[in-house]
Length: 152
Image (cartoon, rainbow, N blue to C red; front, side, top):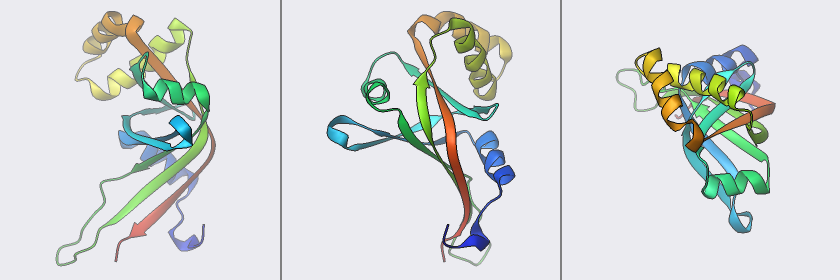
């Protein structure tokens, strides 16, 4: 990182991955074009998890090349009387895989559901209803960096 004063600690990076629910997943798509898509995630035990359908462009990209990056940023702040925002972002580089074990899928989907659904009961209902049609993706983090950005 060029501007060391703006670098976030690993603890700050983990805090952002844990507490902010969405980011942009970047994959290598068809004909080696970048393919970036917004995702909702959960950070558990040093890994990032997503869910999605069992087929589609994302699935094809994951099968063709496991290298990914994932970017998450906080909402930022804009002080009164100023035109710029200050925000923090994290970029993760790693490898993505698709989970195949149903017990592991249920465990990770439970973390995801409990993060987003109003009740645990709703999480359980949705997993029971959709498990057979749901893919769970796992990013193993190889490198992560974070930065405080002042847009001014």
